[in-house]
Length: 68
Image (cartoon, rainbow, N blue to C red; front, side, top):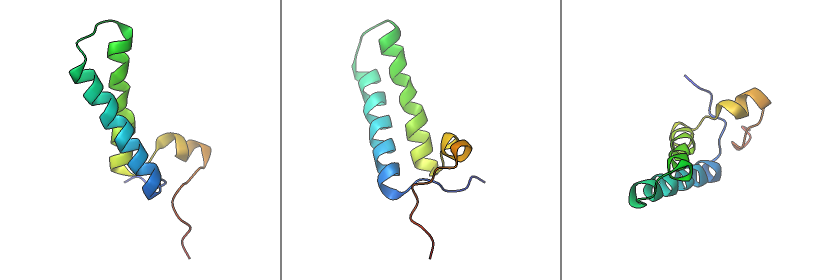
């Protein structure tokens, strides 16, 4: 479906950041724009789980190890 363009460390960092933002969203009882902005964590979580970043594809970037 999507070409893998994220290396292991990149994926791990994205998943960690995404989960942290979503946990913060659900644990914080705040209101306002900052509270809802934490839902952006869905994006790095999804791209980390899939292993493909659409922006990387557009820019021609890849953090995957080179294939020998």
